[in-house]
Image 1: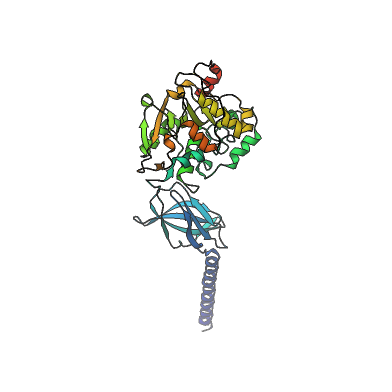
Image 2 (image 1 turned 90 degrees about the vertical axis):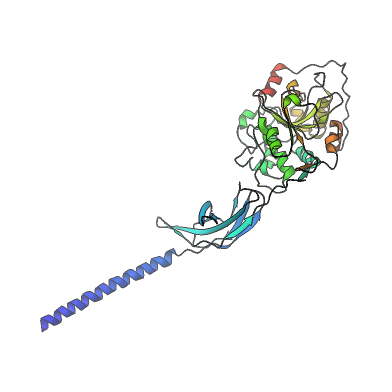
Length: 405
C-alpha cells in the first residue's frame, strides 16, 4: 500500500513539474510576443505629388527601426517594396505621369539579429498629373528663364546629368546655389577637367538646355527632366510633338527659341537661338568650356567673324556680367560650323502643343529679343561687311568643336 502511494506521489510530482515547464514556456513565449509586437506607421498619407513624383508622410512608432514603403498592385494583389526610410517621409521619383498608384507602408524592427514587421497601413491612392499637351508655357517664359544662369554657371562635363532625365539641380525650379558657388570659388584658370562628372556643380551644353526646358514647362521641382545627349535633343523634342524637326541640310533661318543640336561626331553640341541679326549672324545662348553659360555669336552670311551677333553678345556680357567678362574677354565668335552642322527644332506655337507665343517673340530680331530680355538696347557699331575681321586662332576654334554636351 505504501509503495503504491509512493508511486502516485512521484507521478503527481512529475505532472506538477511538467505543468510548471509548460506554463513557464507559455509565459516566456508570451513575454517574447509582447517584446516583438510592432505597430504600423500612424497617419500614412500622400503629402504632395506632381507629374513624376509622390511625397508620402507618416509618424513612426517609438519601437521601430524604420519604415518600408510599398506599391500595391491591384491586379495581382501583391505589395512591391520601393523605398525604406528611417524618418517620417519619403519622396518617390521617376514615376509615370498620369498613372494611378496605390501605396502602403509597414514598420520594421530589428532586435537580436531578427527583423519583425507590423501590419500594413491602410492603402492610399493618387493619380499623378500629366504635362499639359497644349499651352504649357510661352516662348517669352522659356527665354526669360534661359538667361538666369548667365555669367555665373561654369561648364562642368556631365553637369546636369542624372538617371531621371537630369540631376537634382537640372530638375529644380530656379538657379542652383552650387553653380554660383563654384563660379565664386574659381578664377580664369578654371578647367572643366577638374570637375569631370560632378553633375551638381555646373552645366554642360545639354544639361543647360534641359534645365531651361524644365523651368519653362514645370512649376515644381523633382519631376523627370529633359536632359538628353546633345546630338539627339532637337529630334527627341520634336518626337514629343513640340515642333518640327529640321535636318541640318534643310535649315534656312534661325528664330528666337529654336534649339540647334549637332548630330556630327566632331561637334556634339546643343544651343538655343536668340534670333538673327541684319548681317545674318545668329545670337547663341549655350554652355561651353570657354566660360560656361554665355551669349555668343555666329559668323555672318558672308562667313565673317566679329559679326553683329558676337558684338551684341560681348556688349551684354560685359554690361551685366562684368566679373565673368573680365575672366573670359575672348571667345564671343563661334565657328562657321554653328551654321552648317546643326539640326533644328522649330517650336509649334500654334496652341496645339506645349509652347505658345502670345507676345510674338518668334518673329523678333535678335536685337529686339535682347532688348526685351535685358531692358537695354545694344550700344555697339553695327556690322560693316567691308570691315576687315580676323578668324579666331585655330587652337581655340578646335577646342570649341571638340567639347561635347
